[in-house]
Amino acid sequence: MKTNAITKIAKKLVLSIVATASFAGFAQEEEEEKKFSFGGSVDAYFRTNLTSSDQGGQAPATSFADETGFALGMANMIASYEHGNVGAVADLAFGPRGVDAVGSDVEFVNQLYAYWNVSENTTLTFGRFNTYLGYEVISPTGNFNYSTSYLFSNGPFSHVGLKADFSLSEDFSLMLALMNVTDTNFNFSGSYALGAQLGYKGQYLNFYYDDKQALGFEIDYTGGFDVSEGLYLGINAAYADNDGNGFYGAALYPQLKTSDVFSLGLRGEYFATFVDVDGVDDTPVFAATLTGSYEVKNLTIKPELRLDSFGNDAEPFFDNDGDPTNSLSSFSVAAIYSF
Image 1 (cartoon, rainbow, N blue to C red):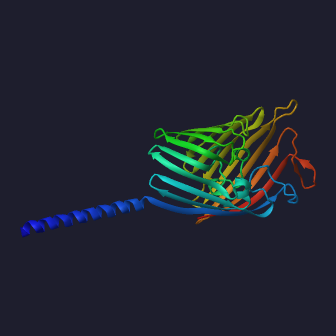
Image 2 (image 1 turned 90 degrees about the vertical axis):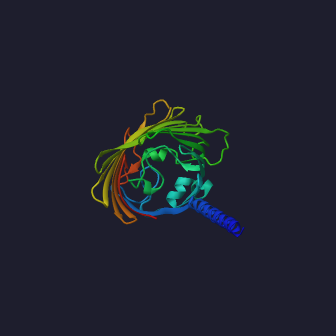
Image 3 (image 1 turned 45 degrees about the vertical axis):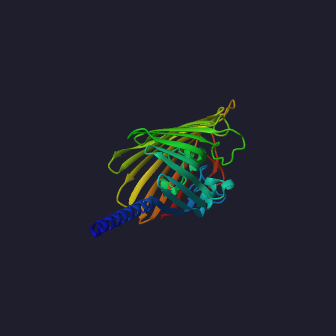
């Protein structure tokens, strides 16, 4: 009887240990699934005009890096939390670049969204997220050139809505979205925008439609290729039409890595706006931007030369004598720290 009693006690003890270990392992597994991360960047720059006085603040008609003298970019702070297959991201932007990017109606919110990995191949995202259109992004850490292109500046920056990302295969991806009208955080019109993206091996064909409420319709191609070891060629082309008014253009981004710490990149862009008015021609501009990128640990120094030249008799700039001119050359150097 004693032997049977001991055996029963031993069995209970073993079962208790196994149960405790299983619970501990399960708790540990649950704990490992919770992931919190925090990062971001800060940037500042100096810019001067080479073919015009700095007085009056002349600059290319593009977003960001448009002040003369010493100027601030933004402080970007990104916090994310993931627990299993769900998570959330809060992306805040402070400073002139941040204000221009997010607008005043959302304070400092660049992105704010929750997501659900429904399956291995499907993710739903709900909230405010940066646009899927175009080659460039808001954060200077995501672009090779410090100043931005006309294509980027004339397209949307962010969207508020619901999007679904599908991994169709190892090579193909698909995104579908229902959103407020571009860059609008509150829907006052009662209209919505539709978005779609088809991806294939790093090449993306993007679509946007809002029934002529803001941007109208835009089709955009974004991609790039490794030409050789150390040489990459990025490509962006877009066409947007809102009831006869819009823009079109294309940009090439060759980038050469010359060493572990230095790279050189050129952005060559042709961009034109058009309006549905008889006798009014398109307004084209050619912009060439040469940028160096030197890395010192988490700090990146970017010197940049830029030339903007308008066609069709457009003269939006002034030269050193104060006379109207169609072109502007400028130089800038930026410091970007990532953490």
